[in-house]
Image (cartoon, rainbow, N blue to C red; front, side, top):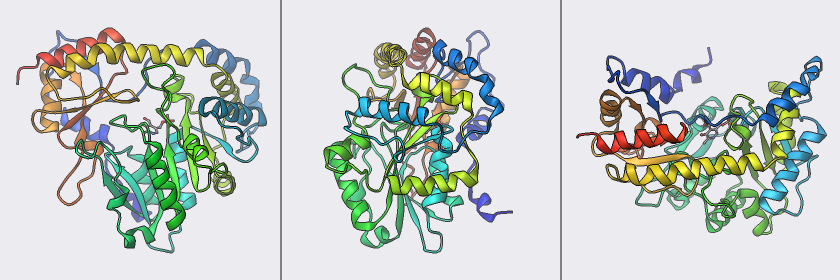
Amino acid sequence: MNPDLARLQPYPFERLGRLFEGVTPPTDLKLIDLSIGEPKHPTPQLIFDALIASLPGLANYPATRGTDALRQSIAGWLMRRYTLPRVDHATQVIPVCGSREALFAVAQAVVDRSRDALVLSPNPFYQIYEGATLLAGAQPHFLPAFPANGFRMEFERVTVDEWRHVQLAYVCSPGNPHGRVLTLDEWQQLFELADRHDFVIAADECYSEIYFEEGKAPLGALQAAHALGRDKFERLLVFGSLSKRSNAPGLRSGYVAGDAALLSQFLLYRTYHGNAMSPPVQAASIAAWSDELHVIENRRKYAAKFAQATPVVQRALKVDKPEAAFYLWAATPFDDEQYARRLYADCHVKALPGSYLGRERNGVNPGKGFVRLALVAQEADVLEAAHRIANLKL
Ligand SMILES: Cc1ncc(COP(=O)(O)O)c(C=O)c1O
């Protein structure tokens, strides 16, 4: 077997299952699960309708690059969302089967394993970055995000010698788990570093559409590139998804957009990898990218939950309302694993210990001492969970 498989860490939810083993939660309280970042609002009817109407498409093999119509609808959405003068649907967009597989695949396509390769990643982080890095034959290089640094990736921490080996940098904005959004200055710093040290930026923006005030959408990487005069999106690949935007995680639909030269190589890789999007899913995706009303309604629901639940959770835990995304990244009064276990045992609420999302470096795991609360359940359940958290006797 590939020896790199042995380097993969157990997925956080596997560890969570083990943490709760042998615990009997109170049966008079129903389970409220805030541990998994799976959207729970209903999938819009327009997705079902388009999917069903396109079922005869199952008779055909899809092309890996998708149909022109799908790439046009994604390019059109990107131009509207990020006020971009031009995104070329022929060369600057590829559909992907959810951003997860694409975030994994990009490392396989980009990393030159004949040289000692480093891949930058935030810490704590979406676990795919690490698995992708290890299976590409590279080493992850983590940049810790703490309250003390405002959850910023401190690129200045990377030494000149380390930069020589960096081939790929994952960034996540809005960030999972803390919801932080990269600023234009940070993008400028990162683009300059990528030019100087010749690496590719993989910008994970799967939470870009979950924010709390209409008209105040988070800055995107393509938008930042355009503002800085990089209209060819040099060295940049952006990953987006319908999973959170359109409450369709089971559809497995997203996009990669950016640098045409990188995308043509990525497409070559993907042709062999064989992850083309099913024709009915392509049709349903066009319907989803072409409609904004359901996305606004989705945001309204998250905004209501955050407005109600955040002050209640704040009675017990130190936590700020995030800039975007659907998580509260809350500091725990004692060890995060023990806290999550107590919360489950006493309140029947599942939360994810932050240490499961981080890696220890130099004796410090920056996820330690936090829990991630995904406000994905229905409004009444989220509020009920917040009250149980506030009333937990320590
Ligand atoms: C930060 C981040 N990126 C990417 C994904 C993958 O989403 P999908 O594959 O559904 O597009 C997730 C899913 O939870 C995530 O949290």
